Amino acid sequence: MLKGKKVILGITGSIAAYKAVYLLRLLVKTGADVQVIITPAGRKFITPVTLSALSGKPVLSEFFANNDGTWHSHVDLGLWADIMIVAPASANTMGKMVNAICDNLLITTYLSAKCPVLVAPAMDLDMFAHPANQRNIELLRSFGAQIVEPGTGELASGLEGKGRMEDPEVIVQRAVDLLESQKKKSLTGKKVLVTAGPTYENIDPVRFIGNYSSGKMGFAIARTLADFGAEVYLVAGPVGLSISHPLIKRTDVVSALEMEAACREFFPLCDAAVFSAAVADYAPAAVANDKLKRTDAEMTIRLKPNPDIAEGLGAKKKENQVTVGFALETSNGEVNALRKIEKKNFDFIVLNSPNKAEEGFMTDTNRITIIHKDHKKESFPLKSKKDVAVDIVTALEKILLK
Ligand code: C5P
Image 1 (tube, helix red, strand yellow):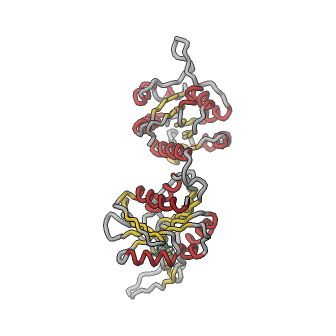
Image 2 (spheres, rainbow, N blue to C red):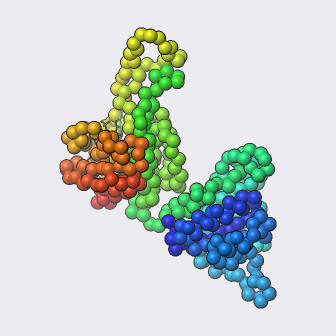
């Protein structure tokens, strides 16, 4: 993922410095060429021996090499790097970064760096929340750095709160995303709406009608679109998935009506929409205010149809807007898919089936056929949902860039 990328890993004086060892290992494992710079305070928490063994390079800390008068050029280091990651970033170091207080090599290198900068703060909850620290974080952002917000949990002080350095895996992913977002992408400037996951339709305060959609396919599409440079409006039903990308704006909804309202707001701003949500076709005609009581009698719930979001937006789509639908069919797949293209005015539809264990809902893999409105067909083998997403986004890209 970071193969051949030159990374400066800046480590500061924080208990979370021990996590930087694992972060360094992950960076090296993904193929990065890592130069560690540690602040004098950082050396009190971990020794350069471990860090140099893992990075395969001497760890830099002082301006001057031992006794021979040679010095470490922060200018050369700053220009060498493809990305600079400061993790953990103490309040002290962030304060120095924003005020150009150059009393150590990490700060001088930061000021000389031309590359993107990722900062992962770590400190006690009150320090983190202090307005002085928050102002420094905002200043860092305004200077172009990306902040990996700390997590909430147990802190070294024994207190609970926000201030834990984010996990090394997340920091690596953010570094990959940041480098990706620097490249000129084919869909830069395009905006795409993506619906994902199921909808839940309330019966009473504790029960609902739902379906087994996991949202994995839609989330993979959203991420791939963002990787291609598109700005994504992701409207997600209730799913247990997280996604973090600077180009993805996520809106969480529960019911079909909420999903429809969000889509109506975003679709007019968009060049395209991918409707991958499994929207409930019906909702209870009335939602009981109180929990329904069990009786021995049969029970009937009257249902009313939900709006068809794709059809409603497809009917008024502008000439240059492209829409993509999904058809999950248990039988007569192609006939039904073609019918849906007509009815919902899709440019193409992604046909898949829930009949096999490795396809459709809840799985990590899928086998799709793309059918275009001119009836042209492309069938793909079984792939991971990530790779399927690339096939779908590539088909969309061809239309958008025509
Ligand atoms: O008719 P069917 O539900 O199979 O159509 C599936 C396609 O229509 C999917 O793209 C789905 O996201 C979209 N759809 C929708 N609103 C609904 C039902 C389906 O947007 N109420």
